[in-house]
Image (cartoon, rainbow, N blue to C red; front, side, top):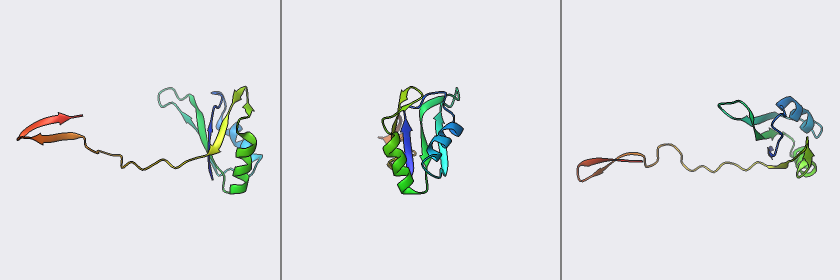
Length: 103
């Protein structure tokens, strides 16, 4: 099960957070999302735990709790909806043989 965590203190590292979730069971992967330019934590991340019961227990026990002075929210991650993405509707369109740029 994939878990979404928000409200993380900016100084928390992946090793520390892996150890915290490891108290509930095996952690398959963990990723704290970071700013592309600065490399600083954005305050949220994802944990993947292979045993659903352990993941649910972690969510139950950690959601709304205090973590290093921050109130964190922990929930099952929702799949990102597939909106088609890509180049939908961009580029040039024709209008009476004249080309107009659409943005």
